[in-house]
Image (cartoon, rainbow, N blue to C red; front, side, top):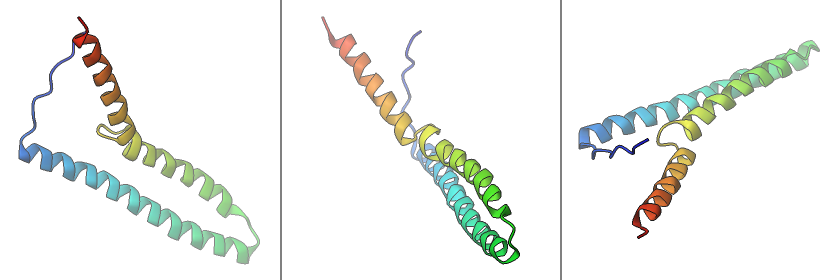
Length: 100
C-alpha cells in the first residue's frame, strides 16, 4: 500500500469544501433545534393527556440526532477526530521514513 501525495487545493476548492462542511454543521443545528421544539411540545401534550408517548419519540429521535452528530462532527472527512488520527499516523510514518 503506497501513500498518495495530496495536491494542494485551490482557493475555489477550499471555499467549496468549507461551504459543504458548514452546510452539514448547519443541518445538524437545525435538526437539533427542531428536535428540541417538537419534543418539548410532545412532552407538554403528554403531560396534559396522561399518556407518556413523548419518551419513546424523544429516545428514537435522539438516537438519530446523535448518529447525525457523530457523522457531521467526528466521522466526516476533515472532522476533528479523523484529522487527529490522520495527523498522528502521518507523523508516525514520517518518523519511520526519516530514520537511517
